[in-house]
Image (cartoon, rainbow, N blue to C red; front, side):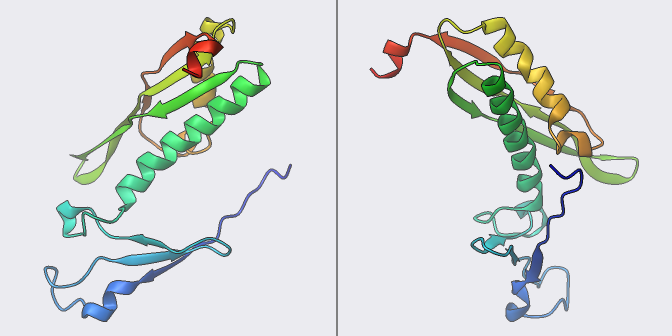
Length: 162
């Protein structure tokens, strides 16, 4: 596998059709992100910055990226360790505050809830969250803490189908 990966996107401000940036209060924050071979992605600014609350904003996307990257890293590590994950969900939270005169993310807390099949190594499944954090490309790319409050439980396979 190559040591370098390139990601290309095309961001278009679609709000221009609703008027120019004649004033801060007046212009639309809507945009579309196009990636070849994928459906268009519609976004806006956070409602705190006069965006459309019905659309995803860059802050949502950052927290989503951290959550998804951790999950995919964790699932890969579990698969390699022969730990059978039955379910995974995460209720992540990102916090932005003003610090040093700039508004920035100061932390993201991931709260994965994982269920593994009984008979697997529960402690290993728990410890793999630390490993997943260290191999997550997105977490390795940010300059604020990404905390992990994972819960891992085990159930018998017969309980899953009921």
